Image 1: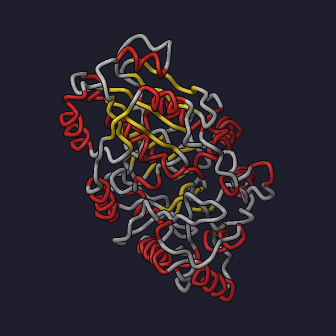
Image 2: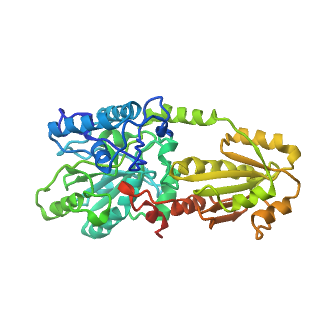
Image 3: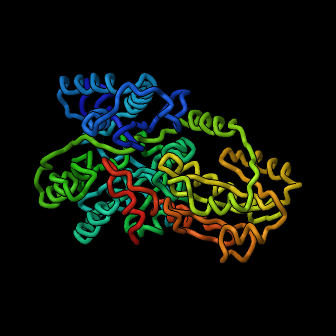
Length: 454
């Protein structure tokens, strides 16, 4: 709940991630339900884009409008998903947003450059823009280019920009990782800032969340703009559309322009839309999700060369990763957890993973034991003969160098990623993200984001 009005109910900020027009998958669970499997709940209604927006975005300050929004959410959400929303809104109410006119909170945060950053280093700037963002959030990704352009347009005019990541890396559920190549850890921040060439300081707040507790960001992105006296003059969104091409109002840009010219900021507050903050109070819920995964059964099936030929054609109709491995292969064992992570992050977006053990069939039990150790509850296959060269030829005549061997196949069987030897986890994830079907709807353009060269 924003601190602009103590009477406003927590329904005014609601966030959706992983949305299709047919099904709603909400960000924050905070309950014992399984966040990664929301579709298991019998739906009360199919959601239209308009209904999603009503349950996902602030509708304004008018109490009657807020009451109508709550009524819509109660009508279209199943009881379990409604509980998600209510728990998330309670969390947001516990961390009120900084009020207009408040002074800039103090912070001392480590940046991806290895330095500790404090407000004092920006004292010469007439305007300070603080942007709360997150690595995993598709909305933050869609706004990233606009944030860079704001920096390019105003940095030479003295405006300082700072991006802060406050999401707890251990609190972000696997179910929310379907649009990212890295997690919300400091190491993930370094990788993202380097790859996407962030021109502004990128600061980590995910462990203590001290800055987030003072600023009260509801979602990512959430923008806070301070004047020369470091009083808050604007907080809210960058503009009024996730799709840049149709945005009509540009509140962040207008606020910067006003402050530089000495005019009052025309709009001081707007609703925000994005991924709700992963507060560290949600770590137990994320741990429960992990325990549910580890409790799933692990099985191993026999595979013939003829079946492998069929597998090469990719009969799944989805993006498919196949990894060939063996228990006696050291790189295979070290690679495997990264491959499972990729599956768990992207499975909800139509991504499949099949593992193929090239162990001697006599060691099938050893292969199964390794898979159980890895909690590999995917489709696991074991070759049915010692003819490894025959299996290599059956799958890929150009495969000549043993294991590990990893390929990612498009739904039509085209190879979009191939690696003989240990995988580069970031390169693999980026190849997957660039070849998943675009989400469309609210998140149209996410696949293009990953296909674009930074």
